[in-house]
Image 1 (cartoon, protein in one colour):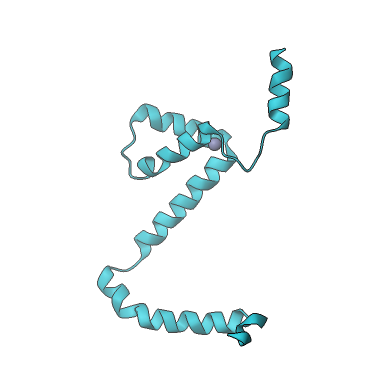
Image 2 (cartoon, rainbow, N blue to C red):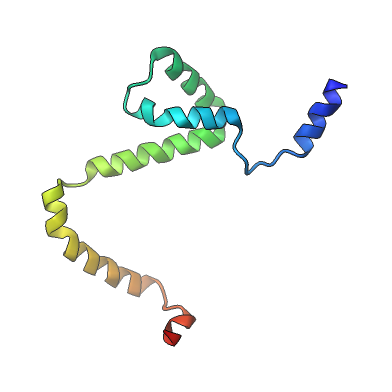
Length: 106
Ligand SMILES: [Zn+2]
């Protein structure tokens, strides 16, 4: 009756819940990003990424984030630019996002 149990398990499976395998893989992604994962673990993670859409998505997002952080100017420059960026951002937000109706009550 193992097969039946398997299908019952599948039927009650919640796609929003991450499987323990995926959780384990995703835990190792930051290490792989920094290149401090051992060869065997890296191969396991890579093999999983090639078959698991969810984990691949997390990996791609992680790579994008790191690329973004690395493309940022140095801390000094960020400090100089912050007020300018913030005011530009505010302008952009005002332009693109209409003020929510409830705002006028505050
Ligand atoms: Zn996965």
